[in-house]
Length: 87
Length: 173
Image 1 (tube, chains in turn cyan, purple):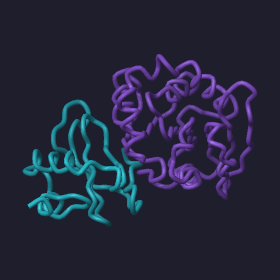
Image 2 (cartoon, chains in turn green, blue; image 1 turned 120 degrees about the vertical axis):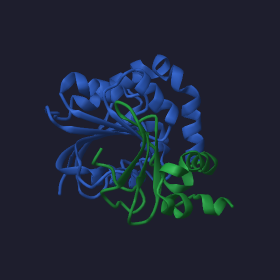
Image 3 (cartoon, one colour; image 1 turned 45 degrees about the horizontal axis):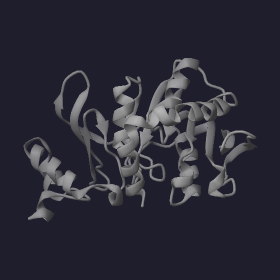
C-alpha cells in the first residue's frame, strides 16, 4: 500500500520489512526512516496508531517474537518502544 | 480516552451491523447521493468500522477502497465479512496517509468522538486531492458547530429524520 505515510511526521515512503507472507503480507514491519518509528503489520493489517494510542506490552511482545527478522536498529532503538528500553 | 473508545468498539464489533446497519446505511446513502464517484477512484473512509460505507461505494463504482479505524475489532469484522478493501488501524486525527491520495474521502458519525474535530477534518482535507470529493457526517447531539476547515468548499445539510449533520463538498486547493 504505497499511500501509507508515518502518522506522526508524515514521511513517505515507509520501508517494508516482510516477516512472514503467504498470499498477502501477513506479518511485517513498516519503518519510518525519518523519525525511526516502527509499525507492525499483523494479519495483513498495518497498525499505524500514534504513540499514545499504542499498547506497549503488545508492541514489545511483537518485537520479542520477531527480533531475528526485524532490523536491529529498530528492535533495539526504534520508537516509541524497543527491546533496549525494556531491559 | 480515545483508547477507551477503541476498546468499546472492539467489544461490540460482532453485533455492530445487526444493531446499526440500517441507520448507518441511511446516512451513507445521504452522503453518497451528494458526491460524485468514478471508476478508478481511490476512496478512503476515515473511521470505517465494519466497512458499511466501503460496501456501498463498491456497489456504485469500481474504486480502490481504503478503510482506517482505531478499533482492531471493527477492522477484523470488516475483514471477516470479506470486504475487498485495504484496512489500516489508525487515528483519524493522525492519519497515516500521504497528502492528496484520495479522490474521495468520507467519515460517517466519527468526528464527534475526536479530541479535536477540526483537526480530524483538516486531516481528511489533507489526504484528499485538490478537487477531490469530501463527505462527512457527525452526530447532531454532539452540539458542535460545523467545523469546516479552511480549503474545503462544502454545503452543510441537516436531515429531518437522521441524527447527523452532513457536510458534502470538495477540497479547493
